[in-house]
Image (cartoon, rainbow, N blue to C red):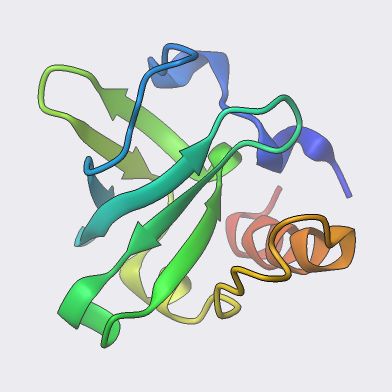
Length: 117
C-alpha cells in the first residue's frame, strides 16, 4: 500500500502545525461533521471526524490523502469523498488506531479503492 494516502497533498493549502480541531469537514455532497482529532505526522497524517447525528455519533478516521482543500479563512476541510463513502468506512477504533499497522492498512485500502488511487 502506498503511503500517499496518509499524507497531505501539497495542493491542499494545509500548513503543517495548524490545529484543525473543531474545523468543519465537507464531503463532495455536503457536510459530514467536525474534526475531533488530527495528526500531521509524516506518513501517518489523518483526521478523526465526529459525524454527530449524521451517522449516529460515529467517528471516522480519514487519511490526510483524502483531503482535497483546506480553507484556512473559513476553517473548513474539503475531502474528495461522498457521504456514502465515508458512511461505509471501517468503524474508527481508538485502541487499534494507535500502533496497529494492520488497522491503518485496512482503512487506507478502503479509501484508496473508493478513490481509484
